[in-house]
Length: 257
Image (tube, rainbow, N blue to C red; front, side, top):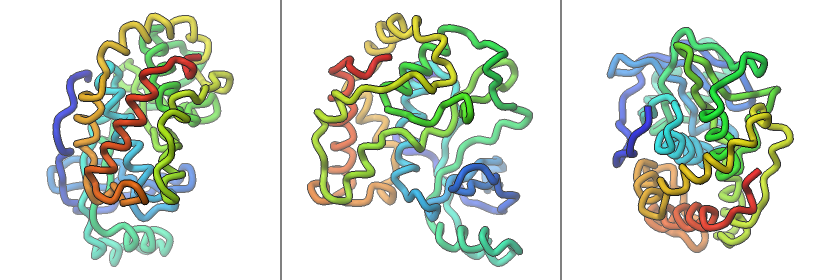
């Protein structure tokens, strides 16, 4: 599933809301779309807002670029008329609040959650540790691994808790150097037993990434999710800010476990 990211995520139309996934506070749901695909929908109207969707795209595409398996992403265009057919008031409210562009994550039928006792290939495990350290992901613990096994392979999912720096941006852009130097703790990570492989993963992965790679990934994020903040008044400014932060982080190593 590795490969270079392409410009602009494909956009498909939601045709049916199937069922909620009552995990966490954002209430993602299974939906069907007009490309005949089935997706886990992360809603723009959920409590965390659109920055979580940006993190999902950026980190998901980084994962793909460094050779990890992660589900295909699309943009889901949601007509709130679909809410009329839902009996659950909480779901109705969420659908009505999420009109427009939402994030779709390819549904992997028959996949199951990662069992830390089952073991996993060391190379993949070290790459996951590297990715989570680089992106400051705080949500891949043994309590909530956010890893799936599908056809015997390890897949990484759910990256909305990464790139925490952008949650401080509504008051204005912050300093990339602070994020670049911020350490990351491996102690609660579900794959911490594989930390000895991170140095080799770093040697391999760091050569795959640079400012241009980050810019290509940010080009996949829809303008509608790049809400302006003081110091970044346009989608282009917002993309440049993310590229600056990721490039600064790549230039340091304090965050390696």
